[in-house]
Image 1: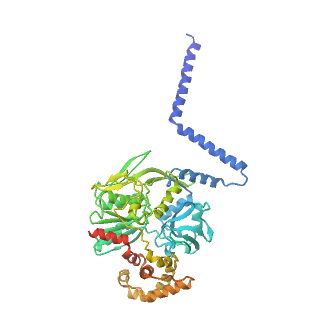
Image 2: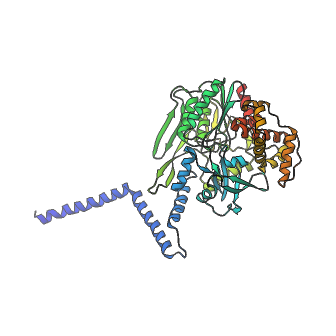
Image 3: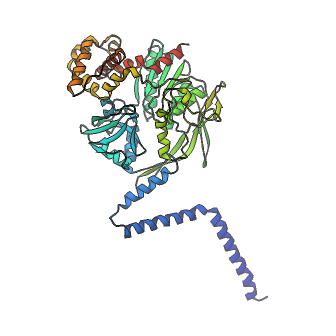
Length: 528
């Protein structure tokens, strides 16, 4: 056989091998080829827009809009953030920053206040979680497609600068106007720790930040020194934070080897986290308070306590966020937060709410809870009976949409206190009590030298109530007809806000909590 005949089958074999290898290579990397085509398509569109669109375009803004829409289409918690937005988010958990002190979400083209920083500028003037921001500096922002970045720019600003915010409060027909003076936002995540009675301590956390765990441990030591045997942990309004902080907190409650939480995802192997060494509060009765704004890390804590039968969960059904995000930094220091796994409570339930109808519908579910009666009646909560799980002692719990409390406490909206609500919504209580505390500071501090003395002995007189109502009327308001319920509520809040001006949260929360129905229920359960 000559060389020419030898070369031909070798060449054919080589070509066939190359073709087979190429087919195998394509099959092994179909996503890479598809991604290349998709990138080309995006570049083509940008090219046409730059070449033919009638106006000048901002390419960076176009790309950001595309990235936000792409990630939003995946689930409600995957998101794109510019370098500046990411800096703001990090600051809110790790360090001080200047602004108005709220967390918000855009729902149905409306800005909803998700959380208000305790002691921050917005909280001080009376803005509350659940409020809808309809205008900023008299410019309407509802229903005009405003973005997160635009809202940040409107609300952020230098210390002492002012911003006027128009608020719609569900259940009230009028628009309320609040002038907020921007300030350095407090970074403490533990609002207050004190004794509810001789044996029961109370700790309120507003988020799970970098320093929360150490703040919590300090509070436990302090309360134990005052005789604490039982604990009420208040996570109402706590929208989450660092997963690791929540795990560390659970470790303080649970004995060694109790399961705290586990995560799993398509490309993430199952990862179980167990309690480790002896915790600071493994003995003694424990109650965790939650509501519809308790989310993420708050739900991990509530779920771990409930599933391990370590304590009771009291309040209203939590938000329902059971997705785990991982952050990836892009070349320009912008970031994407990508959902990579689901987390499960020890019994196996994922408490993530459904989001298959899109992000707007997902957040609109919070409005449906109010409209559907869930805030008032436990029977109105639509539980998925097919998602039943068992706690360590065999109690039935449900997955598929937040943590359902062991004891339900409805939203406190007493129709007999409508006159007080009208007064409270004006924001004038804050102005009056600030001036009153300043003008009477020396005499008040002499009479009530500590927060404890203030809380136990200070009584708001009828003369102070009359002075406030004259102030309220002087601002162009008609004083509503006050029944006994509204008068009692007004005195309570006057005392609490005067106490806050004198002794910060130690003079505020013990007063407000004295009539809080969820806390009273917690004390009743602990006492059984």
